[in-house]
Image 1 (cartoon, one colour):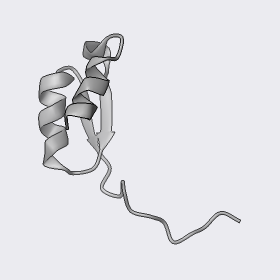
Image 2: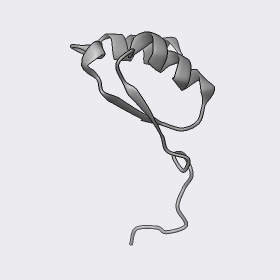
Image 3: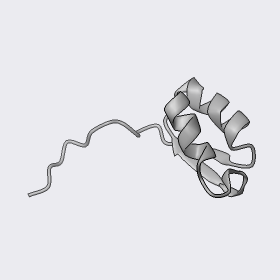
Length: 56
């Protein structure tokens, strides 16, 4: 997780990030709480699943 933590901390104003959309991985809950304290965590249960449809 250090690379992701460094990425968010390198943002201009990480405390101004309002939302983080993620899957249900518990690591992201901890990351959000410590690195993005003002962000609301939005859970996308289908994030990471591929769709059965392919673009033509």
